[in-house]
Image 1 (cartoon, rainbow, N blue to C red):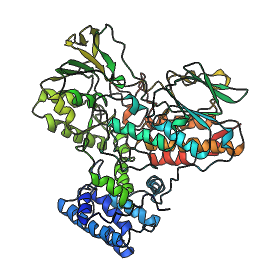
Image 2: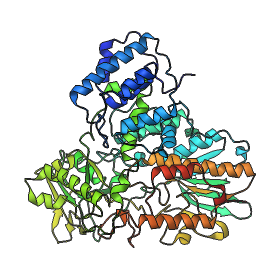
Image 3: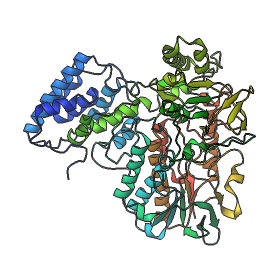
Image 4: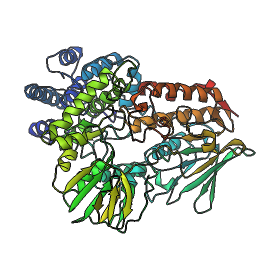
Length: 639
C-alpha cells in the first residue's frame, strides 16, 4: 500500500501551468523539502540542502522563511522542474530517507539546531513513514475491560478512536446533541482557532481540506463530525446525555457512571474528557437586566444585534473575536474590560488557504507533513524562554527577564503602531503586566481597528450593577444596553464541575484535592483506580504547541496504563502516592519560576483566587511526550 503522505499520482490532464499556479499558494521552504524527497540520488538532495535557495529565518505563522520574492520565484521554478521530472517517471513513491537526513531537513527548515531529543517526537508527529505509530495494537484481553468516556469533544473523540483500535468495548456519554465539544458550544460570531489549522488537527488525519489558516467554528465542528463518522464513533455515543457522577465500588472494583436521566453505566475504567474551558463563568452582579443576556458559549441562534446597543463584559480571547465580528451591525458596542491583553502579531490570522495547498498535500509527497512542521516547530517550547522568570531582573511588574522584555517591546510596538495617533486609546490597550503572563491573543489588526470605530467604546472598568436597560460600571457610569453579552470566560480552575467523582473508601475527588487540583502527568490520581482525566490539571499549554498534540500524549499514557492492566490481568491500575506527590511538587516548583505566577497580573484564569497556578503545564512538550509515551511501570500499582 502506498504511503498516504507520499502523494497521489498527478492526473495526466493537469498542465504545467496549473501546477505552477498551485505552487504560488505554497510555503516555499516546505515545498523545497518535498523536492528533497522527489529528486533522485544524494547529489541532487545535497544540491537543495546546500544550495542558495533557503529560508533566512523561522517565526510563528510566517511560512516563507523570510525569503525574498526573487528567491521564492526561483524556488518555485526549480520545484516545477522537479515535479515535472517526477511525473515523467510515473509519480513513483519516493524512497524512505534516513533519520539523519530527516534531522538535517528539520534543522534546515528551522534555521537553527533541532535538538537530538526532539527528533523521535517529530518523526512520530510527522509520520513520514506513513504509519500512525501512536495507534495502539489490538490488546488480547481488552474485551474484558469496558470503558466509559465522558465527553465527545476533541480529546474524548480521540480516546474513543484509540480504545476502539485497541479492542476495548466503550460507551461515550456526551451532554450535547453532537460531537465537537468546545466547537459545538462556542458558536459566537467570529469564533476561530488561534493555532494554525494544519497543526490543530489529529496527527493521523488528512489536513488537505482546511479553507483558512486559522479556521472558524463551523469548519472546525465539521472536521470533528467527519472524524467521528469516518471512525464509526457515533454508534458508541449517547448524545444529549450528561454524566452527573462517577462512583468507584470497592467490592466489585468497577465504576458506576450516573447519568442525568437517572440511569447508570458500569465500567472497569473511566476516561473523563470534560475539558478545562467548558463551564461558563458569569460573575454574580447585583441587579437585573431586562433584555437578552447570555454568555458567549451560549450564544442564541436567533439573536439579532442589528441596530442594537450592545454592552459586552470582558474582552479576553472570546471578546477579542466577537467585537470585530459584530461592530458593523450594532448601533453601539461598549466593551467593559478590566485589563488589556497582550497581542501577538499575526497579519495572516484571517487569511484563506489557496486551492494549491490542498492540491499539494494530496499530490506532492510529504509537502503537508513539512508544512505541519513549519506550523509546529516555532511554537514548540520556544515560548518557555520568554515565560521563565529571571529573579534578578527588574522591574518585575513590567517584564520578568531580558527575553521577556524583548517580547514586551515587540508586542508594544505592534499595538502602538496601529493607534499611535490616539494616546488615550494607547493608554487603554497596552497592558501594564509582563507579556505572556496571561493568554496572548493572535492579532491581525482587527481588534484595534474595531476600537477606533465611532460606534465602539472601550471602558477600562468592571461591572458594578445591572439595571433593566443598562450596565453600570465601577465608576457609576451608566451604559445603556439592549443586549448584554458576557465574554467572561470559564470556570477553568473548577475541574470536573458539576460532576461528583468518588473514589476508594468514599473519598470525594474535589475534597481530596482541596484548593489544589493535581494528577500524575495530569491524568491519574491515587485512590481513584482506573480513572483517567484528559485535559486535566497541569495540562493546558500557555507557551506554544497545540492542545491536540497534548491530548494525543495523554491518550497514549491512558493506553499504556491500560496495557499494563490488561497484560497483568489485573482489576485496577493507579499511580503510586510517591509518583503522584513527586510530579505535583516538581510541577509546582517549576510553575513558580514562570511568568504565569507573577503577582502583577491582576485578573486572569491562569491563577486561582490564591494566586496559584494549577491548570498549566510548565514542561517542555518533548519531555511531556517522552513521559506519557513510556510511563514507568514503577510509578503504578496494579491490583
